[in-house]
Length: 569
Image 1 (cartoon, rainbow, N blue to C red):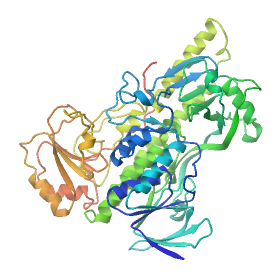
Image 2: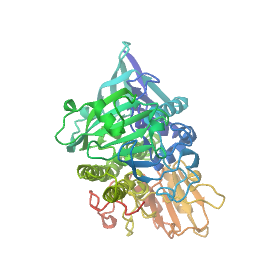
Image 3: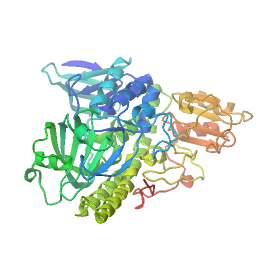
Image 4: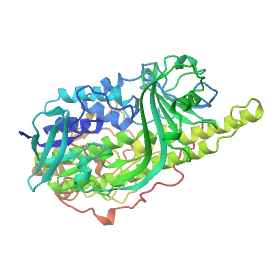
């Protein structure tokens, strides 16, 4: 048996595990990642969208341009098109800028967002190699491929894990201070800590096929699109462009009475594409799966944590499965770094579950409700949607507008990126302000504690986020305010805190002092320095274990029923 020691052990080297490893290493924490696949072995063809918040993280870690340069060709339209079939009549379209115009485009449903990094359409088969190369180049990151976690035990001092070399080498005995399960929907770590998945185990079934169809792009009668939805009474589906040339991922929506065995995959694909029996295509990979909404009943057991699909599984609507997992990882990373560097007590780690579990529940309902709304539309498809004449035109106009209205929120999910906020957290100093409500699409930037630190462009054209420190940053909009007491209190506790003086130029910053956390959420705000700065510092570093309930607001876990945007095409 080979013995290995690391500070943090991560089970799973997909995007969530890789980002967690990268962020911890960036913060000076050594990490060991176990991944069962071989180096360069591609993941399954899934996860086609990287959200803006995730792209902001890539920017901070220095990998954003490499990610942005990968995936679809620079000029390939990132639109979402709704048609009777892939090669049929177009019903409506959600315009999304192509990669070449992503930073400069205006007038679209997601071009108004306050971020230095708009979202990016890229399949995981292109994304993951970029992240892997960057992670392996970072000091402090070690990745063991073809290695699988098999068991672990915890003590007060740490975690001792065993792992199998899948190529027949010696088993590994790994000693770590913390273990993070980023090992997917069938998580070994989740099972070992006794966490259970609860929720909605069966929402719908999908038959997914990864195909190569070199002639398809030329057969589409209108401008190509990244996402292509086929809507007709015979067969409805969603299809994504993978390489922008000849490969596509087709999600065939099963009807309630159908089983996977009863459906002819190739025939369904031809109905979806709107092509005859002689049209050439090749099925490269296939997967039949059931859409669910399942959340682990806990995200932690002492020194062991769950992130990503290990903690939550839902319908991949809103493009937020991987992105939510990365948000989990970034929430946990800075807290773990604080504990391991000594400026935060272990009690701070209770904030991970307190903050992320309610957001997970909210996002899971958003995704499920979107999936159910889409299913209702598919089930009510009019027979005359492909008919010529006025009646057919009217049906196509109505279905096209409905499709736009249902989908613009999930494909331009500004609320899920920028609107969510942390309530009832033990490490946030709340005041009497209420965080603005948000929907799948809409949001309002705010300095209310728990909200995302509002993004602004500075006078020199630099993003505020590029000026924030890697740890806590105190934004001061009035130089006359004396904050030496707060800086001294942070110094006395070893809490890394940077002061950033800024001119008062944007109404969104309605407080003269705003304390931004390492994950770019507001920890505290005020118009004068805190009366008891040491108490505030102890709050944000987890040394005061309970939130001040007199200042905590309660929001229902489930989002409101009317969550969709009322934007029109």
